[in-house]
Length: 376
Ligand SMILES: Nc1nc2c(ncn2[C@@H]2O[C@H](COP(=O)(O)OP(=O)(O)OP(=O)(O)O)[C@@H](O)[C@H]2O)c(=O)[nH]1
Image 1 (cartoon, rainbow, N blue to C red):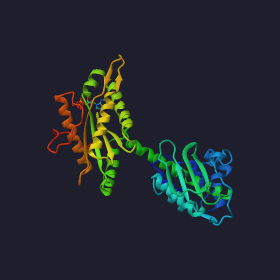
Image 2: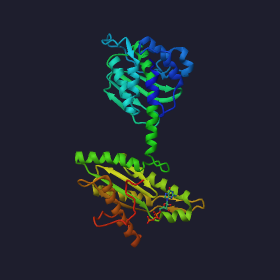
Image 3: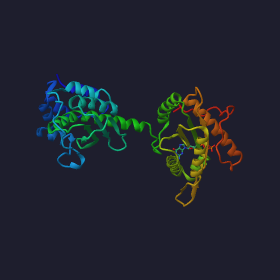
Image 4: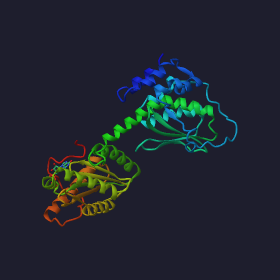
């Protein structure tokens, strides 16, 4: 029986294969390994060349500041098992590509073997931090790397110290889990890219749908308000036509930057497409949403982009606001905000000095052909 099977069939297609990892596993065919064998699998110097160093950098010798091992309070009460079912372990950590689930499965195993009470994972770059259990006085932190690739850092905590034996065994399991963590990180990265507008770095329509549906359900469940702003730049076509698309692009980026500055971290700012943006405001009623819209409009009115010839191109925007009412879908919330935007645009066309966004009017209809929130 080969433990290569669950790894390759689960991971193939989602990431490149890891020949060194598979080669190492192939040399240890038995399903159940003793701890000493497992430690050798990952740490045997024979494998160092194929692994290009250890999968797991413990730093406990090189960098003691990363490792806060506190003196033991007494003898260990719980002995780790003498063997580990590597197939079951690999099946558990490769059963999902979701980082949270991979780390959950890993920590479940670690908990069974070492009885740690809590863990914290800090991913590389902008990965969210994940944690489980509770913090405790004895901590050990592993910096995870796989063939030189940063996989983040995992901190384990428990009420008694981690012995040298424990550390070696934990390293063995982390080494086995490293490819699964790497694949989950890639999956998470790809997913985030899919929800991002490449020009401005804001969320896109997909992000709005995913996050919006969740916030809408939360708002209904907890009777919280939820509001939406729909923004559309004024005469943006003329900006493009007069100054060229690169200047138009810089204006779109400036709008995104301003939205991120003016709104709260809890709000979601997305570029829906073209010169249209949406801000979703959780726990916000209509009055507060309109205040926010006015803050955005004023902030944008102070911004400009300078052309190569030194001309300053200002930014003008119309904004519609709407708040969630009973039985509204996300798309209906968008349509209400969009109707308010339409009123604001019309008012501005009649009188360019009109500044504020209009309230939604039930009777207001967009001309046919306007995109709905769901349309790609
Ligand atoms: N620079 C740039 N322009 C874009 C992009 N996407 C869409 N556009 C342009 O945005 C313009 C939007 O034009 P319209 O929808 O007519 O809007 P408008 O000129 O702002 O008109 P009003 O909304 O009525 O004030 C079009 O000229 C599109 O080509 C982009 O990524 N970059």
